Amino acid sequence: MSGSNLQPQTFFDKVWDEHVVTMLGQDTALVQIDRLVLHELSGSQAVRALDEAHRTPDSRAQVFTVIEHLISTRPGRGPLDSVSVSGPAMIGGTRAASKKWGFHFIDYDDPRQGIAHVVALELGIALPGSTYVCCDSHTSTVGAIGAVAWGIGASEAEHCLATQTLAQAKPQTMRVNFEGELPLGVYAKDMILALIGKIGANGGIGYAVEYAGSTVRSLPMDGRATLCNMAIEFQAKYGFVAPDDITIDYLKGRDYAPQGALWDQAAAHWVSMRSDEGAKFDKEVHIDCSQLKPQVTWGTSPEQVMQIDALVPDPSLQLDVQSRLEAERALEYMQLKPGMSLLGLPIDVAYIGSCTNARLSDLRAAAEILKGRKISPNVQAICVPGSTPVKRAAEAEGLDRIFIDAGFEWHESACGNCGHIGDNRFANLRTISTTNRNFKGRQGPNTRTHLASPATVAASALAGRITDAVKD
Image (tube, rainbow, N blue to C red; front, side, top):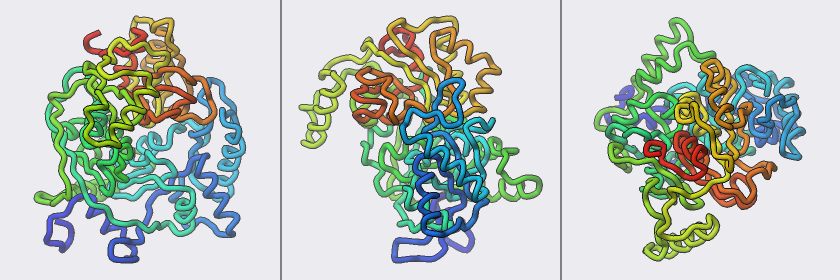
């Protein structure tokens, strides 16, 4: 139980109660924000707006800035290199504002640099039981260590800079129970795609989602981050795993984690915050992971997904009219037909990167498949590590040579081609990607993106077609 409260509480309820400054209405509270992370895209707008309003940051020590959204991933990049026309101004503006206000700043050439959500975990910027916000929809990634984290817009970031608080309506709670041992060739990416396929792209609206169950308890931090990253893809604002021994072991000694005696106190408190036995959730979902197969999307939403050996569904069988129309439009855009198999479908691009699946374990899984082999001559293949520390660790293990020898391009860390920010390299091409979104034009004009795990992407790059990594 939490404090004197006699009712069993969920992890989310405990974190929420610890951060309420005051109630603003029956269901809305002013919430204390422990960490604010800004990148050079929308973050630069927030800092500029604050400056123009002649206001100053309330708590500079709690603000972190990262160059990762617009900076180029090409080897040998410079301080203002970007594929976006507005990129250099935004990068320069964020750099200048960070220096002016004394924020914790991680520049493009900093050895700690990387995608914000990857860096936040690596450095211990986000901690269990903390509130954490960033100007990016995939901020819930850092829920992997038990932070309550969510994405905000530039205007909310400005308010947070000025007050270190935000007004929030308390959501309902959902627990997703993943049970069973993962089969060979099935990963966290397959788990989250299967969940979205089951409950739909709107299944998380109004919920704070706790991932639980024996499968989640056995996942390392990288896998948990993948689950939490894609909470927003089923419209859940928050996705997290309650802290446990894996969390504590992962965070110990991180740059911004407590040290010495404070560490022992913090670790004990974090573990005590897990959901109480008997705590009631507003919704429960169950997934049997022992029966999962590799997943791949066929449409323009993560909910339009199927196991890799299934057939493209027939929209006419959809009972809901809107779902039928969306499926028809998706098939037209993706240039697919009902009853087709995705296995054997030719691809033009294989992309490994993003805050979803570009951590060291992801690169290892792909490299294991690529080692000693060559990609199809018809495929352009790119690997963008999720952070500079991930890149350096991969290079220390020789993974970069495996990728390069196989025919992959080996890039510097940043968001890269996860989203289209001006680089038309993938225009009109079919891509299989470890990223998190596949809507029309996400990776470039008329780019047709299939979401999958790093292992599936690597195997598909070798074959030149969508391929099951285990059976190929």
